[in-house]
Amino acid sequence: MKQSRIFSVAVASAAVLGSVVAVSGTANAAFDPDTADRVTTNDQLGVEGDTYPTTGWFLGDVAAPAGTVTFDGAGLNSAGGNVQVLNAYDAPASTLTDLVLDADFVSLGDATFQVPMFVNDTGTGTQFTTLRPVATGDAGFTADSAWITSQAFGTYVAGAQATLAEFQASIDAIDADGDQAADATVLAYGFITPSPLTSSVQAVAFGDESTWFIPAPTGTYQPATLTVTQARTTGITVDGGGFFPNEALEVYFAVENAASASPLDVTLTADAQGRVQGTVVIPADAVPAAGTYFITIGGLESGVTLQGTVTVLADGAVVTPVPAGPTAPVAVPVRANAAFTG
Image (cartoon, rainbow, N blue to C red; front, top):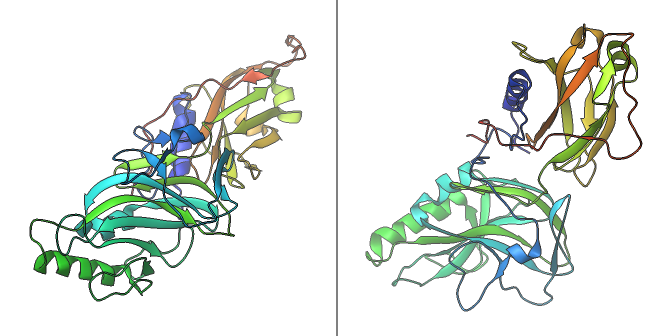
């Protein structure tokens, strides 16, 4: 997993601002929370017909046995056979390497990223192939990584391996020498999981597009009102979801209008479904007195954060008992300016 500490800056800024946020992404590739799509149900997936759909995510044709796609907290799950999931995309194949270097692919298991294209040596719609890294997951996203072609083109036979840079050079040479009215074209991007392997994909970014396959972040915490001593001893219980599976989360606790914020000396861990539960005891230096505070939890890989308001009363004040039932909800998250950037 490619990572950056820019997430901590994003979460600290959110804690300082006191805004309710759900910042999406680590600091590499092209994830942009303002333009990201979220695909979390099967009815959001089209199907391949005689040609690729012109827009949106769809299930590509595969050889038997065809597998199935399901969604849960781990994202888009492929199992039971061959599964190919693609998103229509139109770009000159001369930009392939740049697109791949800026891409991001977050997954568990054995999904392989892929880019179908027409090399168009002898005219529009000719020499179809799909290029894939030899490695699964987020490996293989460099110019010198080994890739493989599904079909023959140029001097390469079907199944030939070369570096991405070598494939790019061949595509560029064909563009220069072949049909000048039919440049090589990227048709789509996505991923494939061959039978009998399985995978769960959380997110993918390519070009100016970002897609999340995990649920939108939500969460609760209690109590929402407590005394200084309670904050320091029994703490606050949090329950949230929408994070990457098994990722570590930082916790911030900052007074309203604070000039800065640092993470507490506590780390929570999301489970295999991207959910986190735990009790956070606030250290004395983080809650020196009564006041309005913001509690913020955020994934160190996903950058997803949840934040809510906590009222801390002076010791001796009467705290209204919390009745049995739903816990205080974390306010509905909205996107902030922080984003996946290269």
